[in-house]
Length: 334
View 1 (cartoon, one colour):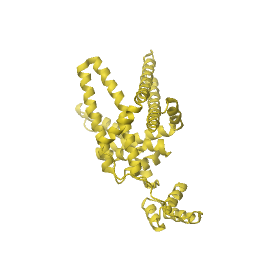
View 2 (cartoon, one colour):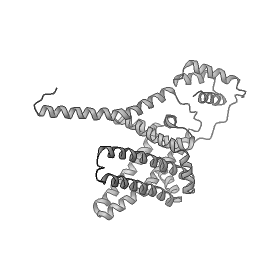
View 3 (spheres, one colour):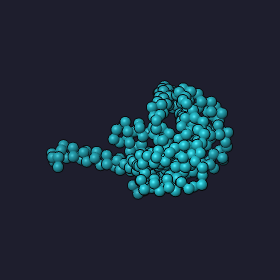
């Protein structure tokens, strides 16, 4: 962690910040006074001239949701068949894996907890690995404007597969942990973690650091980011209603058409998120990121709660049901 602190101090000095300002910002972020003072002293004699660097190019405004959708559509058209192929490959693998596990479970004698539970665990691990690879590959394909080959994007994604699986798992636990108490914390946390996957892919941050950097991008522009993410959900809801109408009216053909619509739109919606990330990153191009110990602990605690919270709720609901059954049978509450 000390190298991150040293890099931050150097960048801030090069940007013209005074040591008093740097120290205050670090203490406010939760860094210990001893470590801050030591790092400030180490960097006094680093042999670098503390000149003021020119400000990087930044965007002054974010495009509105409709502009983002049009940008995503233009990029989508450039690599339409590659995006469809990528998500189709993932869908086929998912179906084949599910069919294989069902076949194993249907073998006489296998329909037991000793078989079903390990199968479920294997299935969930495979889903996370597959999801991580597809999301990472899709992100690299987006970066190339649909020009990269499958071999290139799979190779790049594979080098980050561990980090991708980890960030998908962490973000899932964090957002689920925020959802358990109330919907409001969930909205805040889900918005702050919007760009975590892209941070892992394009900025070489990992785990909680990627979550914290995503939060830093959103900080100060929470409302605009939330509004654009919410509009994406609105677009998805409208198209979901259209797809469900096809299912209800068209029978088997309608269900097939609905599945094709969802397949075609999944890459478009991810492109929308990618475009939003690129614009937010340009908007905050002068941002200096330094993970705060307090923020790290808070998200780790939330992720842990995402694991134990559902168990607590399940046990509470189970206890309540048992007690009501006991009361109905005349056994009293205790």
